[in-house]
Image 1: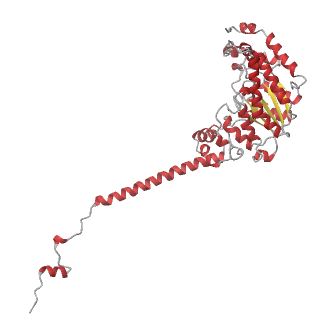
Image 2 (image 1 turned 90 degrees about the horizontal axis):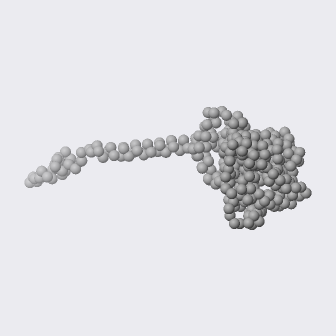
Image 3 (image 1 turned 90 degrees about the vertical axis):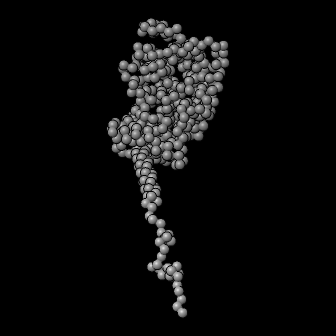
Length: 403
């Protein structure tokens, strides 16, 4: 008996027999294939972008590291036209990596010194580390670098002598305060905060790229010098035209009380920011000097009723410092022909480079040096110059008047 096989069974057994309605193969959907390709392309572009950015940043960092315009890693490269005009950013590198056995520190009263004069007259290899408006704390921060025994500068040679300007006004600043914020990443040894230097746009453009374009390097012997102190911007007519006298003092505090406050603040600054270095480094001579402000500075002191207080402050500072065996002090504020001649000034305190040359000659000869024996006489001479000077004749002669 022949078995009958149904069509359904036959189709199940024979692969060539099938029901079109049962076909489960889905038609191709091109939209599903395009999405993964777009995502892959976006990933590749993003990766390429980050590689390019990283490469650019690496090249910038490498350029800064190689040139090192702030001397954070090495001394200047021979032949590169360095621009040096940023005191708080470039001073620490100069202090740590330049070759020198003496240094000049202080406010803008030190800007116009020429280190070639120190070589000629004193036989010293000098670096200038001026900091305009420097408070005593600014000096302390820089002295930490100068005396860092692990720095290349100190491993090469010790410091023979330091020349430090003493400004009466800034000696009364807060002992812990700096004039401007200190860029700590240039003063410490932490490599992890150096990106602020290596990837700094201003550093790259102004101190790496621009010097290559301009090819006008800074003369390091006269670094930070006041190029604006030219004939047209010095002299009595110019100085008096831009001079603004202090308001007359109208307070009730006694002169003795005000002098006491100045003396106390000065003592605090000396104790916190200068004496520790003097005592820790007996091998170094600390040569301090009181800069020769013009007679107009003392006119302001009279109007503020601070003449006697400032003289008392000077005496107190000098007595403390002169008690140290490795300290010398020069007092330039009573050089009458200098301070009463406004041809030597660009304003009521800042003097021309020739004055700095003369002071360097005094450092070499000992002229104008203070001692415990002549201190009172030198201060008395300052008082006489101020009290006997005819300010009315000066102002009238140049057609100016002040209330």
